[in-house]
Image (tube, rainbow, N blue to C red; front, top):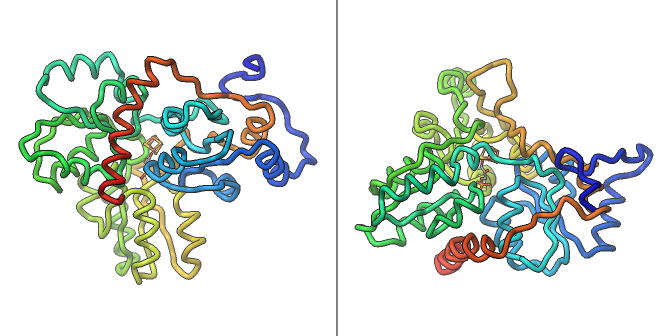
Length: 328
Ligand code: 13P
Ligand code: SF4
């Protein structure tokens, strides 16, 4: 089957006359497959997903599915986490190039040396990491549970937090801790422009600013609400404003508009007016054609070595256990 994959995905032309949505539905039923989709996916991918969620909800869903095949409409670390949690299931990622700049900002060899400088520290890593980094970590967290996981540890516990410096600083601020933070960042979230958000806010003075904690602190300081993608979506459904400025990847606006058709959502502008930098280029690699080919040929598949399976799963399991205890 590997010969079908060229440049990271099944590069076979799809018959233009096919109704891809109907074909995908048919293949899902035939093969007892589900599509787990992230909120940053293209609207048409969100629309065919069986379950949409943030990183925590997607891993919780993967852990409990009865499907034989999981097609992950998201990025590599998310599919890898699903495979860790369901080693007996086939986990497919429609394009292996769907990586993550934040995960890439923390190479395992350098992180290992960094960790050795702080032998008495516990390592908490954000789920946006490779399995190699997970294997070097004690507990994994997501933006949904990071603050609660840190708060669940003894006050005097020394902690290294990796790889997102913005999320790390935000947790330090909220918990009063002094975690040592690895200096990684996401190429989308570090680029929102405070100056241009201020201009937008003058135009829409009643607008609420809502932001993902991967944003820089100067953006977070302006925000009326900070949270994971699910939390931002929920806020738009419970808050009674008319206008919102959204400081996270623009894909999340699709669900916000579906859930709140009467409201107005404005993507926070990036620092370069000429680029679409608030789109995650990795997330947007997943297309209907690739999902169709992936379901049809059952590749590319996520494969994890036995050694990594044991080492990287442990801190993910700890996260799920703590989250369950805290009802997150
Ligand atoms: P969430 O877990 O909040 O969905 O975030 C995932 C992510 O990659 C943010 O950039
Ligand atoms: Fe990674 Fe940033 Fe894309 Fe999220 S938005 S998947 S952190 S590159």
